[in-house]
Amino acid sequence: MTEAQLREVISKTLGQIAPEADLTQLPPEADLRQALDIDSFDHLQFLIGLHEALGVEIPEADYGQLVTLADIVRYLMARVP
Amino acid sequence: MAEFRMPSLGADMEAGTLVEWRVRPGDHVQRGDIIADVETDKGIIEVEVFEAGVVEQMLVQPGTHVPVGTVLALLRTDGAAVATPGSVPLAPGPAPAVVSVPSASTPSASRPVAPAPAATGRRVRVSPLARRLAAELHVDLSTVQGSGPEGAIERADVERAAAMAQPTPPAPAPAAPRPSPAVPAFQAGMRRAIAAAMSRANREIPHYYLQTRIDMSRALHWLEVENQRRAIKDRLLPAVLIIKAVARALGEVPALNGYWIEDTLQLQEAVHLGFAIALRQGGLVAPAMHHADLKSLDELMQALRDLITRVRAGRLRSSEMTDATVTLTHLGDLGVETVYGVIYPPQVALIGCGKILEQPWAEHGMLGVRPVLTATLAADHRATDGHQGARFLEALNHFLQEVGP
View 1 (cartoon, helix red, strand yellow):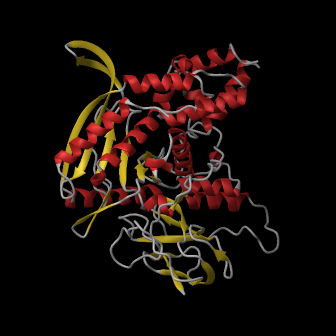
View 2 (cartoon, rainbow over the protein chains, first blue to last red):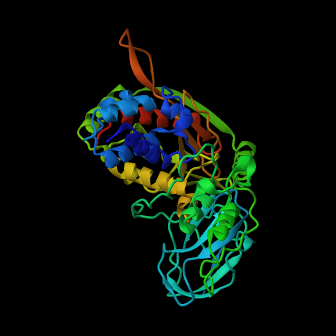
View 3 (cartoon, each protein chain N blue to C red):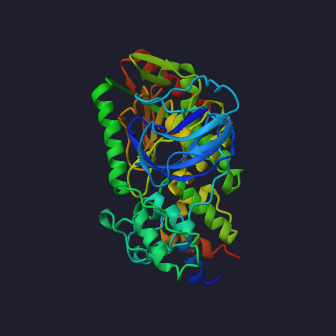
């Protein structure tokens, strides 16, 4: 999977939770939950969505590595099949 | 013959718009069946019927805006109406044929959320009703121009877009745009509904407030270990532990679980926990998690997921809107440390939870750092006194120290 494809998946998954979100406008180092006002429930739904779309296991202990969009891309790129 | 009336779906509702009949004359209905969709200031509510029978006649057409209590349809009942213990009509005035009834069943599996529009260059505000309609009519919300406040997309905008997208309709157009009821901008309506309920609360309810700090280290440690062995889909949120503990603590201090109606406290046996859920487009609703005290952590997580998903999709049921016996507001996702809540009448208590923060914690003469939850109770002094409130917070603390399946 290319990074562009991965970003597409992330954008689509996020779109189901925060339809108004525009990832191209988001600074890559911004805290995603803060910037898009995502609560813990929606955050979990977002991670479940990524898991289902990509098949990547995301242990709870790793949530801290998934704060910014750049984090998420880095984390998932290293793990997608 | 029974009359099915426009129900009161909350203390603040005066009128509603019949959006759609889900049944037709001649249909057999069972208690609890959804027979109509009603639009209120808080979105579209699926209205359940509480008498079994045969639908005889519809008296009101979809699109009609009528006051609470208006007869909408006639039912030929199978027998005498079943008395429902513990049910309380929430609004004075004409008694609605539909009263709140505890539903013993677990909420059904979540409905799919309306497909989200692709991200665009602008921030789009969409009412739940518009979102749902867009999904039904296959309208891409990113192409819709909103006419509401701050460009919010409303029902009429979606209908316009759907009508424009339709090529010359085939002979008898099956998907004629629904009649557009005279409903004000969704957000303005939501604001008014909240304003009415909160003004009443502040005018009528002598609130008292209690606050306590709860060491969450045991609970969070248990949760961490538990979530480690769970697949991501089955993981629990800290909020679920709090919901469970609140429900159990209400069992210890039942005086906080009920309604203040006609100068008396009417205790409710079932704990239907209203859970305040903020809407992305602004405003909030606090639908009930039925029988929260009888549910396991997994069932509560499922119920929470189901409820939030349906709130966001604008699909709540009438019983959920009316029969909460107490409310929990959980602002833990924001930086808020302490919540001083306003009670939702006719309830008599509201529990507020802030963010779990690491704080200095003195115990046994030692100073340490613990994750601390500040829990507050706003209670109606007509119904209870500080002593009972204090017992409740003590019980809440106790149950959070012994979380588990």
